[in-house]
Image 1 (cartoon, helix red, strand yellow):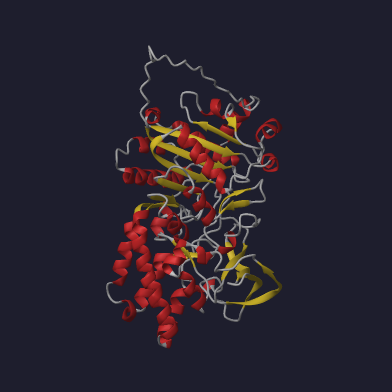
Image 2 (spheres, one colour):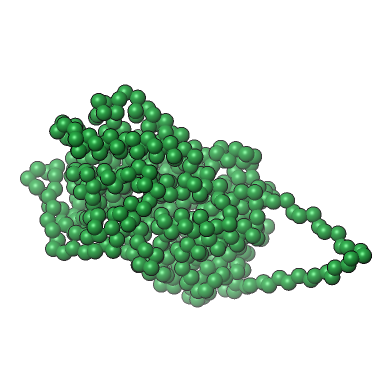
Length: 519
């Protein structure tokens, strides 16, 4: 990365130029009409990259964009790659060590260009056209829709793939705030120059639905985005979704592989996407020296959206029986469900997202009299039919910490965000506090206090409450996932908090916090 940054610094004295092309028209001649040129054949694919410096990641992200230029040059005969990149704020660029000249030139501005491997990244990077007003809000749905439409008009293709690249935070109802409301949290892509506004599940869907072309594949290159809440929201807008369930490193990710895989797809796009995900995770293992003893929670999954409706039907049946048994079943059955919930596996240490299929499996296995002998096999088939390809770091694979999809869990109609104390090595050792968001929009802050039983903690109110400016019905209840499955019924009915409050009692390893090299 230092080498890349030094190279960039050497050319940043060049100003970005806007070249205006004009064309001459030929008057119509009814006697001797001019022959019309044959239209150029459409490219097989146009790959659209829509990214942002992410507040503290411009250097990493520009290196990933530069990796497109390392693709096989022959791939660009069949594949267009078009970039729109918004630079971070001047304050953040200065913190990252960028030169004053570069900051004055680029800070908070957005540029567009089509990748030309013959010119190279440095040549295009320094002459790309600035687009839009300074500090334009990239998280406004219209911004993404306009980019897609502009690309489709100027770089048409038979099929399209979209990459959205920046920070991600999974799904939380307090992220799903109105677009006019600033948020301290983030959903996907947060604009540090626009009060940290971000895409939500609904605003992202709205942007894609309004575009003039349909993307065959949507790649959410952002942390924690492989969740049921987003998958169900996108099911009718694309054929495939690529996303990580865990957090992901900022650097590498094998963008260089994508143009070649798309060029060679020849109707087998699933194999191409599978190949890319495999190369992506392998590149992280190689770049960061990951093996089966090196802690690294990295993964990538390709989802076939055609399988989501069947999965929704199965999850609806699962949830119906779960709610009925918890409300009307025996005390032993209720206790069995509580035990499964208390042991639900977290996907990220602080957030309320848990391993969906393992949670389903644990409850089905605990209640054979409710679900029967074959229900889990049917559910597993529905999950597997959604998954085209799935790869995990060597560490996750060796320890069997693989996660298929995440889902939000809570209790009493609420969900919680945990805060932790870390030791000198950056290892979490004790939960210290939590914020609880209830279904009516009220929030409460609590301390964690150890009890006489070292495996459990009690909660002590910090002494204040807050409003999170929405409600469960107005956010989660509006998701396609909840309308299909009715998951909020379970969040309201459930009385047992998942492992937010008793982490010492877990028999599995909790995910590590984000490392410096992760988003």
